[in-house]
Image (cartoon, rainbow, N blue to C red; front, side, top):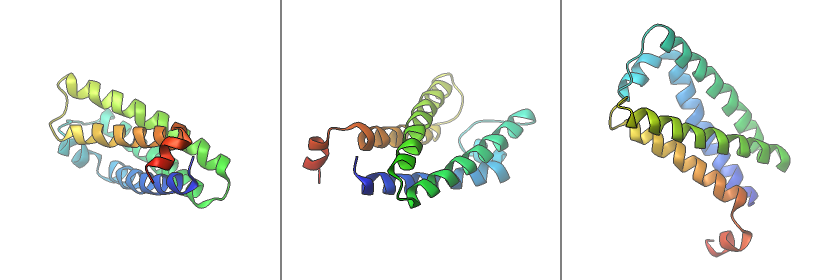
Length: 133
């Protein structure tokens, strides 16, 4: 695993995650409407709670990117691999089920792209990564 690749990925993911977290916390209805998900009442509370989780997880992500402790960076990166991969599945199922609009596929792409990037920086053979440099 290349330290620079992991640090860059963690920083980018932290920025994107913090942005979505803050918007979900402060304006969940607007963001969900943008992607064609209609929500009210309890769904907005759950969206706000998810926003707080995104903020907390991505503060930890930013701190992990800033540390020299490779074990901390690896642990957070593995956490993101699972989070982003499962998020891609859940969002895909929702869209296939008829929820959301075409813009919702951007969420799937974002989740899947981050999952693939984490899978690559964590588990790709070193020789394969060296060839791409």
